[in-house]
Image 1: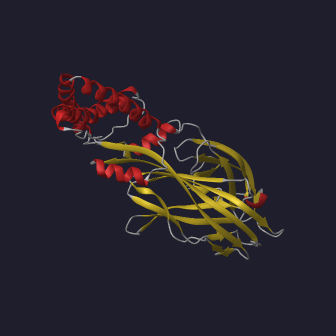
Image 2: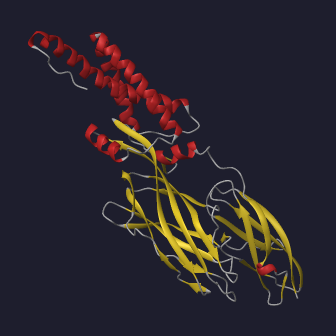
Length: 381
């Protein structure tokens, strides 16, 4: 806001008011920084250091990519697929570091009687920067041809560089040797949610970012609360400055002290190797994950209970309270553990060294490192 001259008789008054307003703007920006730091102290459990910036905005955005897949033949096959728009899904503005969540949402699903429901399909997901360079974010892997209403969640995935949008690579499908994939069709959307904190050093840059992100909303609760508190205090400070010239000078001096503290905070914008955007998102999701996965099934591959070759394959199914890849390893009769395998995509091979019964112990862990165990008995004949 700027004051404009309405006539010569009021010019002196207007110049005085404009001078007070400029001081109020400086005070407003700096008091906002004071309250951001205060908000950080009020929530010590989150412990998110925030760098000094004149303008910032925490927001979320959404978008979708439609695609269609047709499976046939097997056991290894690159299914036919189509997407009406092969160009990247662009996010609102050139976002900085942040996180994304992806949900596969079927709108049409059809399978033949011969379709193998253990078929695993993988779709590569790439992040695209402003120069058009592609970086693999994750391979989105799912089992079966999911029916309508059976949405599948992937992520969250953390991106530590600037990105402009997302693009899908060509899918691949696989079913175990000895099985025929059969045929199936799927039409679906990949729905995206992205979270970021955007910092700008000038009002012009902030205005550009805000216009690009007009549909975005703040998701990280601590950043949201800090912004609301700072806005309220800034409005009160401006009213006081407009009514009293002396108060404006005092606030200006206090703002200088606040800027000195904020400049020191700018030396460190990460905590435990993660950005402020990561910890803001984690806080909004309920904090650190401490719940172990739930093991639903431990069995021999294809229902087997014995082997005559000495090698036995274990299939593990489990669920967790958070999205993310689950892994499992196994040991026989209290011996050495195998390596970790992604589940349920892979069966775990173990060695039954002698004829007779053997106890197989399986341990499953989630992305946060929480784990649980289960056992089964298998025989070598």
